[in-house]
Image (cartoon, rainbow, N blue to C red; front, side):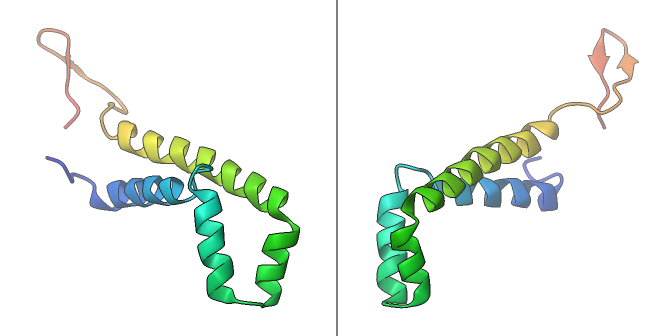
Length: 93
């Protein structure tokens, strides 16, 4: 069954989608859209003056979100406490 634990899978997919949006290769386009959307506010000024800091934080989030999303998705496929039954098969249910 695909969604055996829907809350954990949803969290994993949200992390992976947000990592895709903050991918360093998409970041210049995303920052241009955000800076254009907020106009000449203090936030747009902060983005333009601290581009290296914003890029470093977004890249760090990208790496952590990818790792956490993959970990949450693959954690469902492994057994926490496997019980051997029959022919060395794990009983995960």
